[in-house]
Length: 442
Image 1 (cartoon, rainbow, N blue to C red):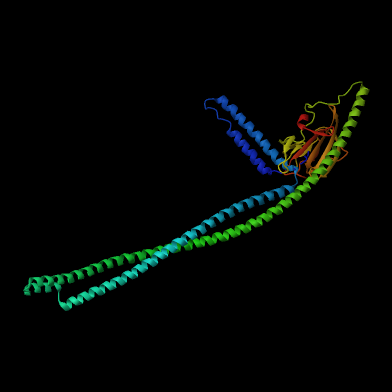
Image 2 (cartoon, rainbow, N blue to C red; image 1 turned 60 degrees about the vertical axis):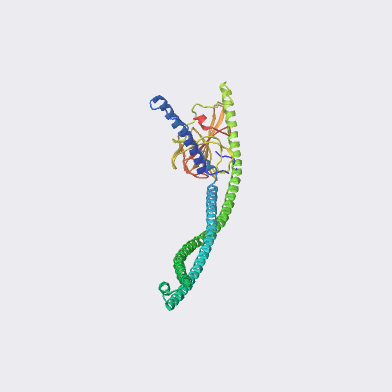
């Protein structure tokens, strides 16, 4: 019933792959036309057949784990969980570090914008101060002109008085030019003052706008600084978490290796046990063959030594339950190498009675680490071979060593002892001490 072993993904991953296979298989079957009823029925049947095949493979994948100890299954699951956590933690760390780098770059950019906004504010304030001084200076100039005009009289009235009182035209022209110059100077100073005041309003608006820009940039920079500090803390926490998970994974790897080494040691002892049992059954088969040959000689007939490959239903089913894992070679989900599943698994519930597949003698019933409670029945010499059956993982016995049993007699009960992931019967048929496909004997 056992295998010789070395590590792939666990049954869950294997079952998931198989399940993906069935989805792919189902997706690959084209739907028949609505009016082609016969073709649709054929394809529906094909779909059901594919589904059953995949379900059998899934069941087989789950039962493959019966070939490893609970400690190894647990250690492997913990290792995979630690690896998954570490992978997720590293991805989170990388994401956080990327966000932190972006926040730091944005911080530099915002600082540059803030510095530029502050410079513009300083310049606007300097321009405003200069403009205010200029207004004051121009107001002083205009004030002096007004005082002078007040002291000398209104220039326009002075010009009229000169026209009325002057006797010399040449002198009158020069006087009028002087008066016009005074008026022009006053007008220029006034225009400049008005322009400077208008510019002063613009400068005041620029200062207000610059203040607003500085406030916006400071607020954005402060918010980004908070974000950067949060990300920095998250990155530090993530780094610590990764370091912790690396340590946990190392511990899980160590535990898995210990469990694997223990399993391999058990498997080596199992091979010795298999060899021992095979030797016993071979010797019993040879003795039975000799007795049968002697009996045949006394009766004047002969027997064949090779025996048929199929027995046309010599053995009865030990339990009334579906086969969940067939006889044959497959890849072990943890050890990862090809090994023989030397019997078939019946999906029966714990406590289900196990019946003798044929009459025979109980030659051994004992507990073994991997096989659990097992019972070996020698059914004698039939169809040219010595025939024996082995039932494994029993929860209990109904018969004992040395006892003769009849066909259909209860010999034990289905269990989940030894290396087992759930209640089931692992049933092995031995021909001359060598495991063969039990289906050839049903």
